[in-house]
Length: 303
Image 1 (tube, helix red, strand yellow):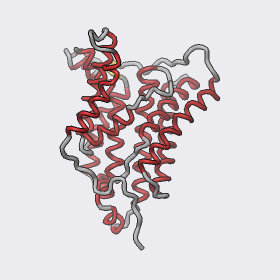
Image 2 (cartoon, rainbow, N blue to C red):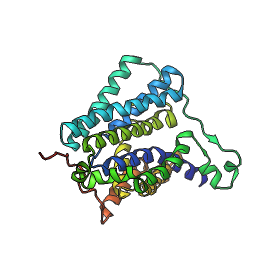
Image 3 (tube, rainbow, N blue to C red):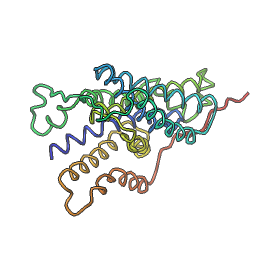
Image 4 (cartoon, rainbow, N blue to C red):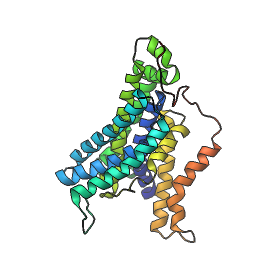
């Protein structure tokens, strides 16, 4: 049980990065439907950067840059060119697969054996990691999970307790009022989407260099969309995203455990699909959503 809980926290980490990033972006009115592509580009950038440099830290930096570049493309098209957010995001997601496949072939050719890197090591925190049950679960993780312990309360505090958070929330609810106050709606949305891209890049890198230690074009496997759904299910709140990510992380951890233990009478495909089935069930059963009023609506300033 301790191993399952520890793995659940680990598997929830990239979902937390992605869902909190999505919460912030959607609070400004931007549905970052390119999140799957951002995850994939982050995974690719993280692996390539780590493999070529021999440094996981540089890999994370490259992943952040890859996520930001992808987010720039999405933000420019949707914020400034006023194009449809869903259509643009889906197109970028498809494009990301092609870009990653192409440059993997260009850089590495066709390797005989899979290219791998040593993934991020777990870092037991002295004394705390020795606490029964809690220690192995919370204090024997890698650095990206530990960073989430800081990001979650910080994200909540900024969004609800600061003037910056008020501006972000107002941009998604009443962009006209933000404009009248002398602030540029497009600039706010653009910057927040770029920050979301950076966090999405880290989330993608978690899979390639924080967990598996290799890259394939199907490494994300729809988890970007799960992070997208967690934002909705968490009611556009960082704490809601935390709960949602932990639930999905637990579902994935149970699925991995059942696959490794044989799964009894149930086929392995059922456990692989478990997080996605949970996404559908929770989305259907959720009765009310506190949707930002201008979510997905391009802002066009009236003359």
